[in-house]
Length: 330
Image 1 (cartoon, rainbow, N blue to C red):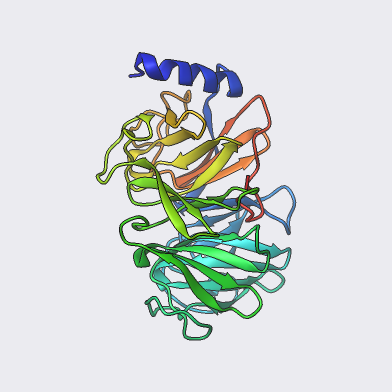
Image 2: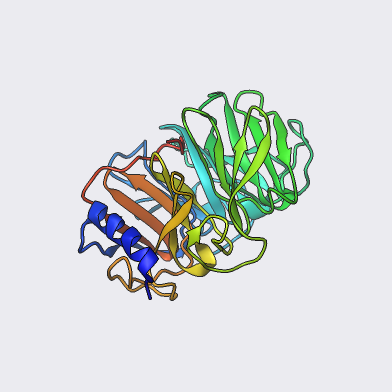
């Protein structure tokens, strides 16, 4: 139930998206949808990860949604183990995070052939370098808007933020901190400052890339669910994070089966979207059911939600900030 404090937040959000706003199902999938973007190669299509595969619309580009493994190959002959994120370098090349194979792989969109880009696929570790560099369950990959030739990646089970040079493929560790950067997953970049907002196991943190200082923003040291001031808010195994506006972040609440809105001006979690019950039921933004939401895409006036076996959407009355094309920047 919504308490009095959350009603004003609810009303404000509903004013933005429409009082009758509800979730709708865009597509059924075979696996969890970890990441969504607009397809640069095929305008009008969504490009998304479906379990262990990468799809455009209904068509598999590489991998198998159900069957995990490691195999370089062409199209559905290639095998991945959880494609948790990807960046489109251009219309002909995609870099995909092959999370539990501990590497980043290149997908040639002209041939649908895969190859290793960074990390020693199937071998985990925290080594920096080029050919010998290793990751341990990397999760989110984004372009660094302040250094266009570099990528940023959350390296979950190294409790680290890493960088990759697009040209030399040099992998370096920017920050590694088991206390402040515990199991990082989602990541988004603020365009002007270059600061990163990162979801960890139970909290949200900000990373200043210049000073490499990690600042705690919201959440506790234990799992839970609570809206309110950042100092009191609780989260549980969050995933994607994107900007909804210049001072609002949306987080895929994962285990809590909710989306959370964080307001950076008031330092409060303003609203939880959906009921918290696991399911696929489309309904209003307060009563809908989500099943482990993980991927988010803000495009014009629509918020797309990737979850287990579905892509869902909430359509608003106004244009939001967009986080397409791997920029993930506000």
